[in-house]
Image (tube, rainbow, N blue to C red; front, side, top):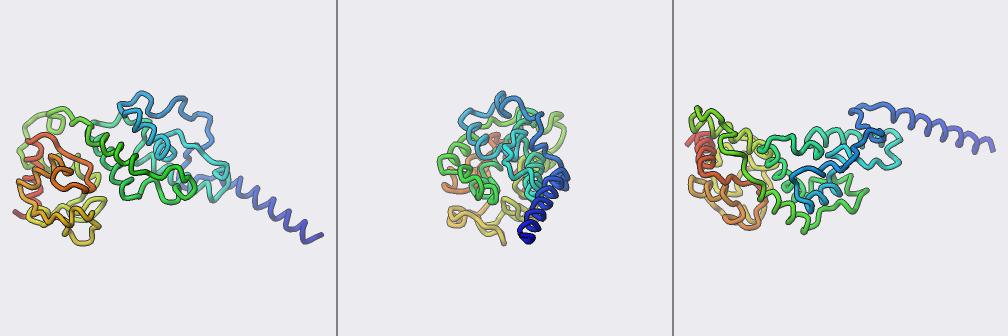
Length: 266
């Protein structure tokens, strides 16, 4: 009997301690149970199509908006800490509630990254999908997201370089920094392969990057012509690739290609 009482007391103490420690926020306070939650859907007044809003609300909004549906276990540490960590990081990376406040270029980059991350099954996070089976991204979801990303209009002409005073090389560098660095870097692989040396390189051959089968099979040598076609419409040049970003303006493609060529020592 004493043993049973001891176990019960220890259990009660552990439960109380867990509840108390949940008030500590080592990764930031996500306000999971705050009454100040959003009073209306995060994307209700955004330019995102309704069918895309439905997918994002069901699969992404728990971490990427203020509308987190906190489960009961989120009141107990250390589970609360892990959940808050993912939510805080998710909101910092992209907050769907603030979609219309982002510059047009940034919205375009975000849309491309959403498609890229979901296609590679990096988002939603694996630990989230394990608990919430309904958040898995289907092929139909991917098609809807990709169609949306491709249809987002280009930023207004001149928004990249309002003065028009910079040379093509400077414009190319600025375009690269604004349009490409969400997924690419010059010297290292990220979501996309490193782009230093891409000019003159054969498609699918950057060391250490996991290319799609379509890109590896294409064996295209990147030059002015092929890079222009790629940036114009990646799917037309290499069907089945995993790039969901394009540059519709010829002048911007020319500046980007010039920058990539120079960065490749050509």
